[in-house]
Length: 185
Image (tube, rainbow, N blue to C red; front, side):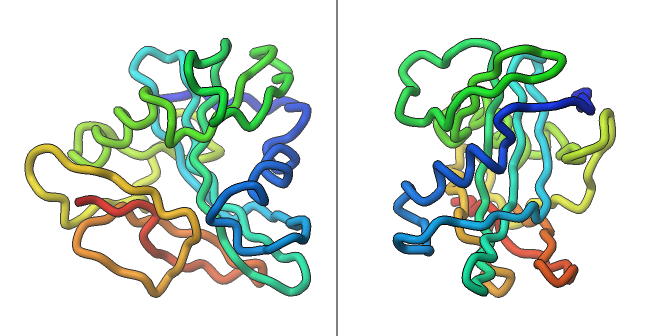
């Protein structure tokens, strides 16, 4: 299980996300700038201990909106070859130094860990607590054998499907909801 360092990160994840999310095809905010608030998430572990993996949920509350996005991030100590288009940017971590932060959907270490999770070989970790499992992140309806995992980028507590990874997130008013964060087929 991963150790979570209580330290500074500059620029912050939210600052990087606020610049990156409006450039994505699933961004629902049009031409305006987002106002992001943390809404939850979870982590998976890299068996080699080299790549940080975090599945972040953030809610855009600009102009009275309440759209929650799911952005998986990978944190690396060096650039990931061939993944320039997935780079959100770099940050200076107070303990680990410079980190390259990627949209983890394009990181092979993360996609392998997500496959291991949906097949029950690894467990989800708490987003903020070191060495702590997060049993609230569940997986159901997964077919045997090889599967394709499609990340849900705009979260909807009402959506459902046959096979999915489900997690909870917080709305700006403090209400907690659950829904699919990845679809498995």
